[in-house]
Image 1 (cartoon, one colour):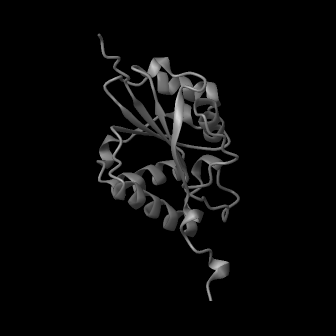
Image 2: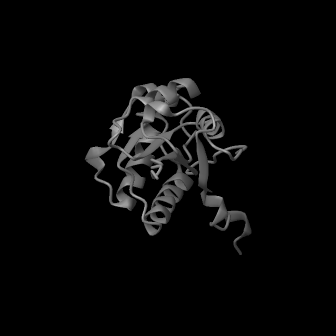
Length: 178
């Protein structure tokens, strides 16, 4: 009798925190986080730390808002900021390009956090998991457990939604405070 070993990879899809549209002359790539983004990103990073989550690799879009979000999440989870990798391909990538980025990761990495942009992250989450998400909100996290040995095996419905979390599930909105 042989035991079947099921390998697992974990993918955390993180949408960048809320960005500012205050300076309309800024290029989209250069938009910073706004006040809400600066509040929500640390909150969500702390939530992950409380769950004992610390990915093997954080891979992020180099757009200013995604880069800052990745650094905040890393700081809150105790992940070394210098180990964050930035991939220009993630910025403005479609689902297929994001899949290619993931497939090219080292298989020694068992948990990958991808920090990027919508609508592509929502599309990718829905493509990979058994759970349909309408929208990953800013600072939102879709965690997918993948029954694969190598990142190259990632494909349609290869995973199960482990959790889906976002700030508004936990924070009281400013309009309801008295």
